[in-house]
Length: 330
View (cartoon, one colour):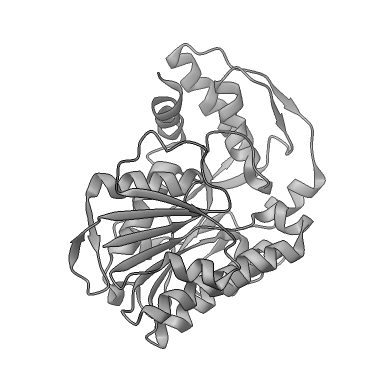
């Protein structure tokens, strides 16, 4: 079978691809395990050189997700599964509304329609976000029945995607599943346009001896999940029996809220254990970042996710150690 990952050249897309390569097989449209013989990573730009971790099963493609013909060419087999991660992120969507609508809404519809056109009812896992919630009256803990109240264009497009996944599944067009993510840490590389990017940067830059400019105060809380658990969560949701997910196809991954001060304490604790000299953290509050991130809930009920086998982090220290092991140790 073939697996298509949109946004596949990004961090989570690559991590999911690596995990699928290691597994070797996934459940196809008929629900039976099948060998994965092709993984196609689709993104707006293709890598200049092949990924060092990839083998001959992995191909890359670049293009505009808002172009129907481009997307249809990706989903070119009946025995296909799709992980739809491609998206304009939170702060980026606030700066460029039209691009967010084109990529997130029209691109998402193109993916759904291309999967529907196969006629094989393929599994399609959509990456959503806690940003579907927001506002001053939002409870700090949300569950499956909390209504969508996004306060950003990004959140609005994710809410639309969740509803579309439900309806395309109800109509029998696809076997859709939505993974609703908290903020995922620790992302390697350079900062992106996400308002929550500081939640990775507060660990990533100091661990590499670099300065991190912190845009929120030390008492600010964020709901986090480590990337290793997130990847396993994506795969668990893909593999789950549809009846176990239910008619509402959204699954909130496990999560825990941490104050910035707790993040820094964990960072310093692990750095001391590993004998690493940390780069400085400079406080420089950004009201726009605090407003966006502060509109999100601090806990999502993850009962369904845990029942489906989605793991949770042992603690924040283990997430930091995992990042060091995966990205900083030669």
